[in-house]
Image 1 (cartoon, rainbow over the protein chains, first blue to last red):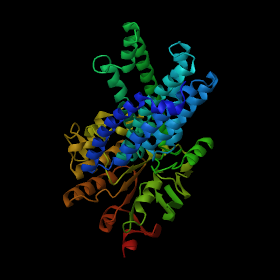
Image 2 (cartoon, rainbow over the protein chains, first blue to last red):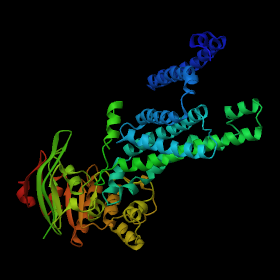
Image 3 (cartoon, rainbow over the protein chains, first blue to last red):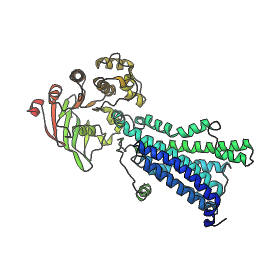
Image 4 (cartoon, each protein chain N blue to C red):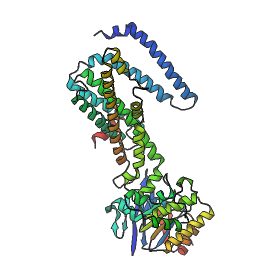
Length: 279
Length: 222
């Protein structure tokens, strides 16, 4: 393994920076368009872009060291990834009561079931270098679904508060009063996963499969393994969405079946962690 | 016999007292109107009676039973509320009118629904999309939606607010017919004191979250 300063001066890294500049220019176009159209999304778009770059470069620099940790620690690492993913994801529904706790549980359930099953089935090797990146990919995709379900659920409830209370006022159980909005949230959250599955191999030709084939793997096996990966993403997304929507449907109401007010909560990580621990 | 009794009900939100020690007893079959200026706490009081909000003090007794000991769904089936905003769902008039029994998984008596729509002046409206209705029609559907649920106590929150005069007259006529049938207990919130006088047996006046006067319409209005 080469030392970090040597890696930074590697010609390929310098060439990579030019490619990063090109991608950044495209991102700048998007941010510029947002500004021109007064969408007020520049901060969020720019922040996420810069942050993603810094994080992935840092991970690239450290990943060699990461792969030397004992296998037993990879569970802790994946749990930390779930925690951080939940922290980021809960911002999409920051007015939903207990959004962080719901995100931790949903991502935990969705990711753990899939990772444990696929490790048991031998589809994910019991090595850090396989478990951590594939686990991270599953968690990241589950997070996308969780963010979408939170965002949609919060929007649906806030937009239909009067309608939900009108039905509650008739003595309809809360889970029935919000069922159509829960369904809508699940449906919307699974659009990316379902569309990716529908277009797999026709429009969406995953890089990993292409890489395996170019690397000399049997193309049929490469396709099978890619489908396994997609299946894991599909299952993790589905389980996360179902768990989150179930918990959201309950969190929206008090014990006396009153629709809660949606106020911003858990503004800091410490407060959010405390709320999880105190329950 | 007392059907519903609010006992020193209180409701605070964000440190502000919205309903303040409000006590009111309503007899079976009686119609009580609640009047008072905007922001006096009338609608908040009605929401507390339906337990859509949790009282921060006091409670409500239904037939002598503290409503906090009853399942909220059972309470709201017996004490139904028509909100000021009809808030109809996407779908037809029939789907909206029958939403109570349907979402509880109960059989819907189609004949009764037809008769109710006739009574409400909504003959031929059953299959119309709710989104196509005028304000007055939507309000009548909202009343029908609660009446289909057959509540023992009917809570009406400003049923004619923001309606034109013709719609207001139609709804008042409908309410008069509704009140004349059976022994339904009704609590009606209205900003229109003359409407209270026309419809109610007794009137309770709200001011700053408190009930400041209760009596016959003549006693309270003078």
